[in-house]
Length: 103
Figure 1 (tube, one colour):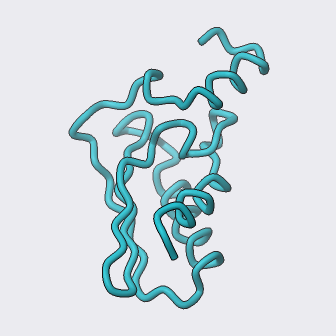
Figure 2: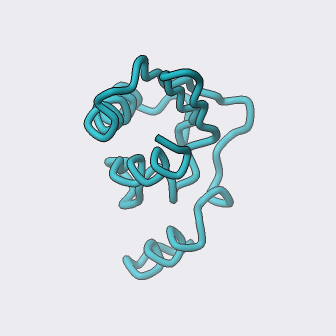
C-alpha cells in the first residue's frame, strides 16, 4: 500500500452533491501510512456539510475494501484552510465544465 494506491482508491469516493470524486475535488489533504495503519486527512466543502458522516463512512468502507489487511484506518477532518474551487484539479474542472457547470 502506497500513497498513490490510496489516492487511486479514494477516487472512487464521490461527493453526493458534486459530480466529482474527493481527490479531484481537492478534499484530500494528506495521507499518512505508518506501520500498518492508514490516516487520511481531508476537508469538506464546508464545515457544516450535511453529508459529513456519509462521506467519512464511504471513505473508510472504500479503503477497507481496497486494503483488507491494513490495521487501523482513520479519517481526520482539517478545516484550518477553507476549501474553495481553486482546490479542484484540472481534470475535475474540465469534467464540471463538460457537465455545464460555470466554473
